[in-house]
Length: 477
Image (cartoon, rainbow, N blue to C red):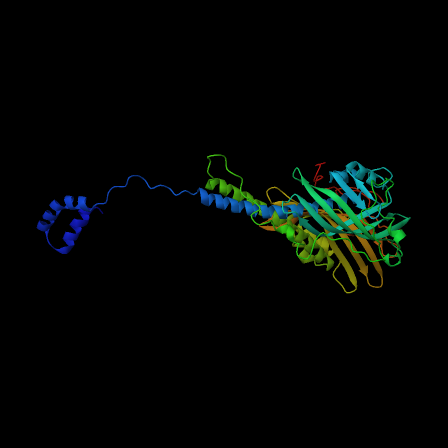
């Protein structure tokens, strides 16, 4: 309401009539002109948001740096687990690709091999100059229990690992083994590589007599190559049964530092000259960071799902197991054929038997290699099955195999879309894998699969390499 109308309304409401109103109207222009504020010089100036946008962009960059350290941890874990799977199959060409050009390798007390060509000679010297296993060979190297520490700049890392060894030659002998890695890694051209591999041997004992009767001479058999080392071992030490603690790269106050970047370790990239940061650019950074964090979170969720499957299988919990599968999932285990859909998965699980007293069915899910899709909506995992099966007073078995599974986000929940379990060996406890191996399972009586198994293979003592869902993380082969 302008000053003329406001003045007229005031006169009307005061009951003074039209005469005073006429006088008031005659005087109003002058009064209004005197009372009115001076017109603004121009539109108000927008505040300078550049400093605030810069601070927000720096904060986004700092959070992204923390996320990148977790991403590096996952990549390092995958790298060492992949090393183990390649070692299982004596895929030495793939293993050598995982090393930096100036890397060193030291296994037990067999000396130091320096450089990739020397490291290649070492591995080929384990298998008579050939890549791959031959029929009757078993070479399992379980990579377990990582402690990973990243350098402040995120370009180097150290890690301690436990290796559990099951190897042997069918009808000749088998061995247990245990050792500890203290390794170093370097990030080059965006890829993590092994810079220094040092395996400290604990014991390497025949299956039948076990580790309680091993000796230093027996322990030294492990990892002995026909290729000559470049220099003597860097550490002289005694193996089991003598006591020796392999040096630890970490202390009690630093074992979890891989998740923490140093304070103010990251700042946003400087904008082009004379180009201020914009809200739109900042929003794009936030969206990219949200996707990165979602993919990192998916790694943990997928590993949890795979582990939950193992715990449910331990106790033959068919209802809980089948709930982990999407409606259109498929299941294929041990050559029994392919089962289509969650209902068929449930019926398959029922035929494994109900939980009873005196029955052991331990399904350990170990050594995961997890790959999340770029959009964060699907995932794959390679995991190792280490199984102990038994019926009290009747039988006991060891088993080992490999899963290659795929997952999807189903209404915000991760579920199996494909579970595929490949058998390496089933063997009875008394004879072990050196003398006994069970053929692939056959179809359940009266319960045929929907499709025959997708890959024809024989388990140990035959040689079969389960397909990898991933390429070599360094070479891309």
